[in-house]
Image (cartoon, rainbow, N blue to C red):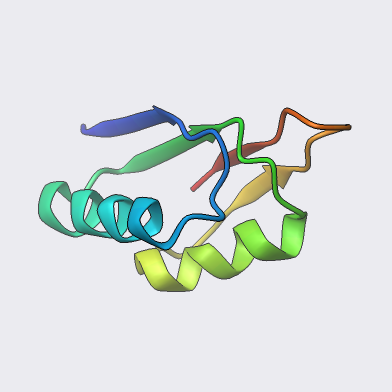
Length: 71
């Protein structure tokens, strides 16, 4: 089983999202865990489609930090 875990520090940067998509498509992990997403739940859930994954559980950050996502 392959698991990808990344302390993401915000998914607002297009280059970072492109790198994540490339990693997911090349390694085909069963689980993807992102911490420090710093985004609203709907933004993280929309990322699921770009990654080509079926499910996501996300918790938005509070204040200037935090946020978790499990795909």
